[in-house]
Amino acid sequence: MDFREILKLQFDEYESEIERLVDGLTDEERRFMPSKESHHIDFALWHASRAEDILLNYGVREEEQFWIRGGWAEKFGIPPTDTGLGYTGQQVKEMPAVSLDDLLAYYKAVRAETLECVRTIEPDEMDKRCPFERLHHQLPDVTKGGVLAHMVVEPVQHLGQIGYIRGIIRGM
Amino acid sequence: MLLKLHDEFTVSIFLQTRIPLYPITYIFCIMLWILLDVRKRLMPRLKGASMDFREILKLQFDEYQSETERYLDGLSDKERRFMPFEKYNHIDFLLWHASRAEDALLNSSVREKEQLWIRGGWSKKFGIPPADTGLGYTGQQVKDMPAVSLDDLLAYQKAVRAETLECVRTIEPDEMDKRCPNERVQRRRPGVTKGGILAHMVVEPSQHLGQIGYIRGIIRGM
Figure 1 (cartoon, rainbow over the protein chains, first blue to last red):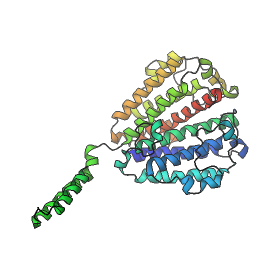
Figure 2: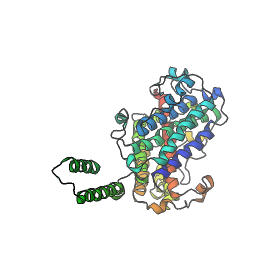
Figure 3: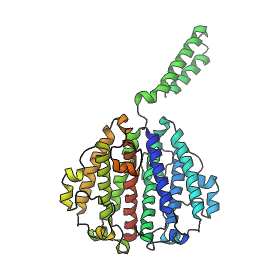
Figure 4: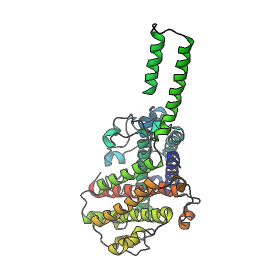
């Protein structure tokens, strides 16, 4: 088992969990906020995909983000530079309505690029310093491989939040 | 670095007219190029510095650790037992359950040893039955979970994590590909290997970590 297989297994587990957790939720349920400042499921799903996109493309592949390149910012009606980071409760509440299909389509498009990168990245590329300088404030001296490892831990936390909100709405 | 030296060397050979361009010079250059190229290709493998499964897992467990400490920082006992809408998991339950799951997965499914929860006397210390993992607990059971100090919760978490990191550091690569011996886990994840369990041990507890952060957000604001 090499680094590729570990990451693939983790991303696959994320995939099957996300489908299970959003299954059958109504538009209203997906916009439920347990408190004024606590985000809803649509926000968590968008933000997790958005974070994966920026980490992959700026932190590893050194390409334009798919959010911008693929026209998703326009499609969602959200400014191209927004990632959801630092959003207030009010901003989360006012996030434009996006269908579950579109949210999942963006997520899957990003994930396809992630899996392609995990499958093909050269081992010595993994040890190179991450070129996205802003990320070094949060993870000092992180390598490209470190960014890929982080791309599991961060979105999976949001996945857990989606499960928790679902539990509040539908019972455990 | 090697390639750069080699380029400069080649250039100097051809540009410095003082060196006579005998056929032997060409042959020497070609042989040198082959030697350097082969070395360059082999270097990453020889030094073994490339990121392997151990390093990926280590980074992920380390991130989990620093996030856990950040989320718990400064929370009171009362805040850690806060249940949104009076029935959803509180932070103490999530912290215990995540460590408990890591312990069970590591020891029953990878190392094939007695769980630390039992072996280390933690079950008695916490006053929770040895077989309990928190899985399937009702809201009432979560509410009634015995009061445990944050120090004890973190001591158990860190003791389990130390065994996890030791396992990640020392497990043989061919052991990673072996079928997980825990049949109960096999029912949920058919054909899972020991390596697959270690990968899962990041994904499951990290979900609970995100939930701890979310509850902190409900209590304290984002």
